[in-house]
Structure formats: structure tokens, C-alpha cells
Amino acid sequence: MKILGIETSCDETGIALVENGRHILSSTLASSKEMHTKYGGIYPEIAARAQLKVIIPLLDQTIKQAFGNSQNWRSEFDAIAVTSGPGLKSSLLVGVETAKTLALVLQKPIIPVNHVLAHLYANWLYPERPANWKEVEGLPLLPALCLIVSGGHTVLLLMKDHGNFKLLGTTLDDAAGEAFDKTARLLGFSYPGGPEIANAATKFQIRSASLGTKFRINFPRPMIRSSDLNFSFSGLKTAVLREFQKYKKNDDSQLPPDLINAFAYEIQEAITDVLVAKTLKAAIKLKPKSILLAGGVAANICLKEKFLLEIRNLKLEIPLCVPPPVLCTDNAAFIASYGYFNFHPQPWKKIDVYPSLTDIKTAN
Ligand code: KG4
Ligand code: ZN
Image (cartoon, rainbow, N blue to C red; front, side):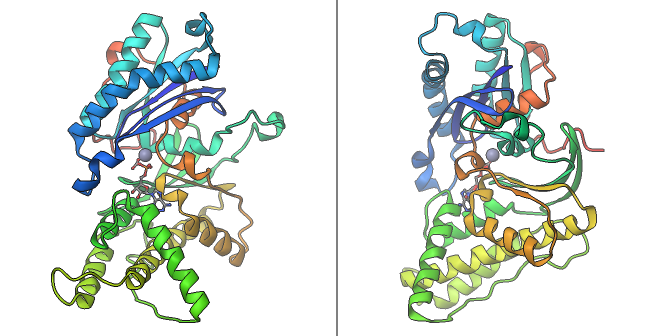
């Protein structure tokens, strides 16, 4: 089965065609990121206008990439999966209305997709058709312990089967990605802050190693030892701000780049320490068959390495699945994959946008 995925929940516009939930036939993505740099976050109307302009050309491009100039492209795919929430209302509307139009005109089934849960399906995707298709068919192994860390969400859940989740923990305030973005902004980096912090942290590590220095700033690891599996990152932002002001001579002064890099390193350490500790605490208790990371923050190399190291240290012997960075951040391929593994089409008239969709609907 081939599914057309449509993603427009935030600043990206993504269209993809995915076969059997795994093999990406084509995937295109446009972002309005640069247009928001001066605002330090996403400006919703700018995002939606940009999406309106690019969505049809991207659709055309994605179809041509997958099916060439075939006149039969309309019958080449079976269904449409579209992000219906959570996200920015005006952005969601662009994708949902496009999907509904296609569903009506082409008479295709349409599946509304929860964007947060869909991130997980990046773990089912293969850019090339896997040669050992039969072997990978049952992967990743379920039940899986899942950590979804994106710009707006930090969710720890147990996935027993497709559509069968148990929510274990979530953030009480800022999401992990938000913590990266907000602290990055403080340090003078542009949006999105996660990759900028990661880059600066690597520079700090390289310099410290070459100079043999051990300079460290210390930030708290919020809730790392709390008895539940929830997270909190807003205290970290306050701690960074306080420390930052100590080093600033006056309002207009800039911190030296090496010091900024030291801040970035410690921010990354603090966020990743908490994510790893809480997830592995749940893994010890629940003994899942695999651990899945997903969401933009899962593109962080330090996070992946820390997970691998701790899983080894704790002798857990649970496989860790982390999608390639390009599939961690928003794209339409994981939306299409979600549609395949959760094939519950609805009449197009019933499809709507849910900007603050928070419930993991199928939790039990
Ligand atoms: O999943 P995503 O693309 O969009 C949402 O659904 O929110 O996640 C975006 C978030 C941003 O907060 C961004 O700073 C963060 O993912 N991010 C990273 C990295 N790449 C993206 N955070 C840390 N390290 C990275 N390499
Ligand atoms: Zn996302």
C-alpha cells in the first residue's frame, strides 16, 4: 500500500510517498525557518503564508519523483495521511484542507494523524527498500519504551502495539527542544537552537581536549531523581539566565565565544542527562523489547551516545533505535508511515484541525 503523507504542523511543509509504512518512495520538505530568525521563534502567519505558496509545487515534485511522468499517478497511491494536530492552527489548516481536497477529488481514504505520536514512525522508515525486507518486517520490537522529544513535546510512553500506548511521563513545563531553543536564544544563537547548542558544545569539547582544560559551569538536572517519570526544564532556563548575567559586565557586553561554548556544552549535558536517566529508569522497571527515540531532539548525537553508554553500563541489553537525524525532525514520511500502521480512514467531512491535541488518544 502506498500512502501520501502531508505535514504542515509548524514551519515546515512536507509531502512524502511511502510504501507499506517503511520504504520512502519520495519525500520533499520546505521550511520557512529563516523568515522567523529575527522573531526568535515561529511567527504563525508568516509560516502559514509560506506553506500556502509551496504546498502545491511540493506535491507536484513528490509525485513526479515517485512515479515519473506517469499519467496514472492518481491510481498509483492508495490513501492520504495528514497531520491534524497538535500544531499551529493556520499551518495545520493548509495541510488539512489540501488533503481533504485531494481526498474528495481523487476519491481516496484519508487518515488524520497525531503529529507527536507520528514522530515515532521515523523508526520504521527506510530511505531505500531494505534488501532483507523479511528480516526487518517485525522491527522495531514491541513493546517499546518511547521517548518523544521535540520542540513542543517531551513524552515518555510504552507502546504495546500500534495504537496502543500507555503514557508514563511528560514535561510539567517546557519541552526538551524548547529548553534548547530558549537557552540558545539567551546565548545569542538563532532558531532552532538545538543544532546550534550541539555545534557549540562540540567546539568546547574539542578545545578543552586540545588545551587539557577542565573548566566547567554547573547547571541543575531538574527532577532527575524524582520518583515519577515526569520532566521539567524551565528551571534550567532560569539557572542559565542567572549564570549568564554573572559573566556579563553590562547589558551590551558580549561573552567571549569560548565561554558561550562552555555554556552550550553544559546545557546539552544537563538536558541529555535528565532524558537518559528518566528513560532508563523506566526501562529497568518495564523491561521493554526496545527503546525508541523520536522528535527533533533525537537528532542530537550526544543524546544517542549517552543512551548507548548508559545502556551498556547498566547491562540492559535492550536495542536502542534512533532514526537518522533527517528523519528525526519534522517531515511527511513519518506521517505516511503512521497512516499505514494506524489505518483508520475517516470521511473527509469529519477531518478537522486540533491545534492543542494533547491526549494520547489511545492510552489505556
Ligand atoms: O520534531 P521537531 O522537528 O519539531 C516539532 O515537532 O517540534 O523538533 C524541533 C526541535 C527544536 O526545538 C530544535 O531545537 C530541536 O528539535 N533539535 C535539536 C537538534 N536538532 C533539532 N535539539 C538538539 N540537538 C539537535 N541536533
Ligand atoms: Zn515534530
